Length: 86
Image 1 (cartoon, rainbow, N blue to C red):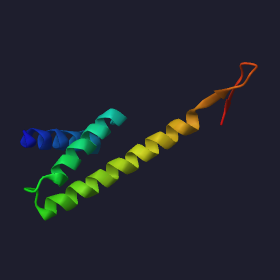
Image 2: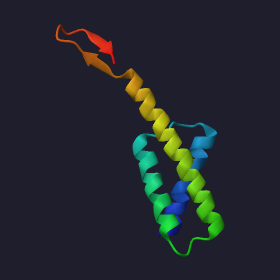
Image 3: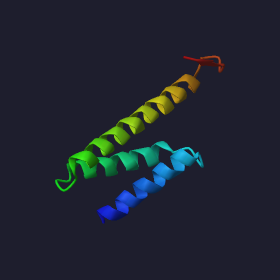
Image 4: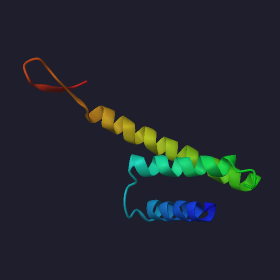
């Protein structure tokens, strides 16, 4: 079962590097869950743990950038119905 999860992670990494499609936040959260499980697994080597940690930090940075972009695009509606950024 964990091998399948590792395969999923490899496929996602490949897509991201090839630029085929941008990852959704849901995809990123799923991958972060997989990485957390792998890090908690006592069978994971120290080298793999460092690699998984680094990938997780990259994904967290990606999430922060996506959320910052969304926050900047959010609009607030005034009482008179006009939209303005906040």
